[in-house]
Image 1 (cartoon, helix red, strand yellow):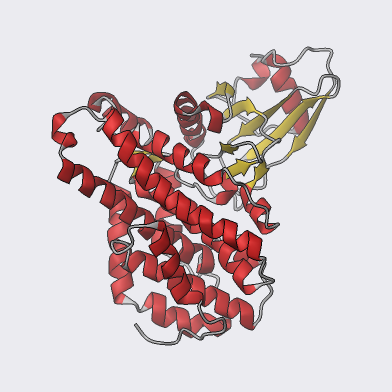
Image 2 (cartoon, rainbow, N blue to C red):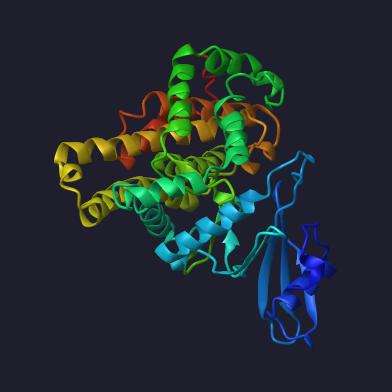
Length: 410
């Protein structure tokens, strides 16, 4: 690597060209185009493409300042992302972009271009369906999560991995945005429609039962180093096409409860489903999305059970009662974290497109209330739901009557 890249600096497009040439990824004679394609708040992402051969790579760089606000942020997150992508690629290469190079000094990842896959959140916004999604994402979740527990992994190695994936600043963001601010708006950054303020105050801020359950989930998130998580597995981190899926952007990776990743996937699928219900309903899309949510829950549960029997050899853990309790806790956690994801993405500082871009009016008021009640029910009743069908029945309870005010107190 040339002297130019011996100290960290934020690269421009021309710098990126020089960088990939220095790595030997392209011939010096090639004409390269560089396009900044990052749409997130944290990192800078460049697509580099040869105009002659069409060969392309993605260069992702972490800066010392948060892209959206200029807040200082440790660039070690880039090393964590490189490490988890490498580990997950070894486990499920069909679902992970290949890493070509990681540079600790420049905090840069060079990886496979997955532009033949499209951002799932945007595809769902356009009411597109993907028949293989439930099968693919359930396999990804089971293989990447259970395989990294100390029920499967060598326990000494797993303890070292827990140390390696201590992701203090990124976890701190989640601890605040997911588990604190939606229930205590101490930073005054929540996004609440004026018409829903009293509803949120009664059903979220002053809901002691809900807050107690969220506190349990938060404590579990902080202290249960169960498996290596992606840490931010919403639909914007999943890229799909009709043939398959790729999972990207695990910069929030850490060792935590398996249900957090599973719940993030399930929770984010309810947004396009409920928005479709309230705005110009497409029955075909509705049917596919319902089936997908049911299948993801049921397939994760089924595949976890099968994989558990295949991978776990310690006789102590082969005890049937222990296994049943272990899996029950994972699935209950998944529903609880789906609920916290729904609530925080509806009224928190980081709303999803399906909410923040919906036209403001009576329909949106009712849609947000339905989402909040669904989130509350998922959290409070997480041990009562044992199947995908029961999960959908819970949904029906909050959207049976469009326009219902949901003003009934707890």
